[in-house]
Amino acid sequence: MDKSCMYWGFSAGNGWFDLLDTLCERLQFWTDRRNAVQLIAEQVKEKLGLLEVYVNAAGSEHISGEQKGMVRMASAMSERICEVCGHPGWLIDDDETWYRVRCAPHRDRRTDDPVAVLYTFRSQDSGHVIGQIAVRGNPAATLAEADAAALLRAARKEGYDELQIVAIRDLAELPARLRE
Image 1 (spheres, one colour):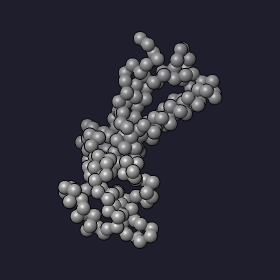
Image 2: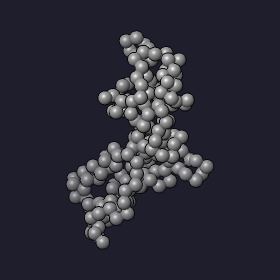
Image 3: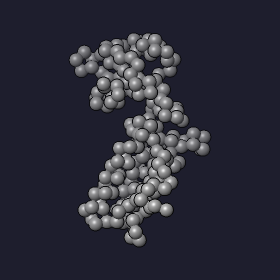
Image 4: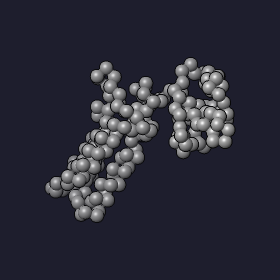
C-alpha cells in the first residue's frame, strides 16, 4: 500500500476548510522549523459531530506531543465551527443518536441545504435595518432600508413561511457570495 495517499479518505464539510488548512500549515511549519517528523494524513472525517484527523509519521519515527496537541486542538475547535459554512456554531445532539456542529441557519438541517436566511445590518447613516435574504448561500432579495414588517413581507414574497434571522455587526461578516 502506498502510504503517501490518504487511504481511508476525506469526509468533512466545507465549513471546516479553514480549520484544516490552518492545521496543515501549522503542522508543516513545526516539521520544517523543529526538524520534526513529517506527518501523513490517513483519514479526515466527522465523527460524533467533531472533526477527526488521523495521522501517521513517515517512517518509524514518533509523532511529537506538540503535533498531537495541534491535531487535538483542531478537533476541539471544530466543536464551535459550523461544518456546513464555517460560521460560529455549536454541537447539536439529536435524540442522542446523531451529532453535528451547526450555526443558527443550518441548525435544523441534517443536510448542507440551509433554510432561507435573512442577514440584517443596521445602517450607520440612517439607523434603518438593511436586509439580505439568502437561500443556499445565494442572494434572493435585498432590502436597502426596511422595517421588520417590510423584511417579513419580502421573505413571504420570495415564498418563505419561515425565515432564520442572523444579525451581523459588520458587513464583512456577510457571506462572500452575498457581497458580490
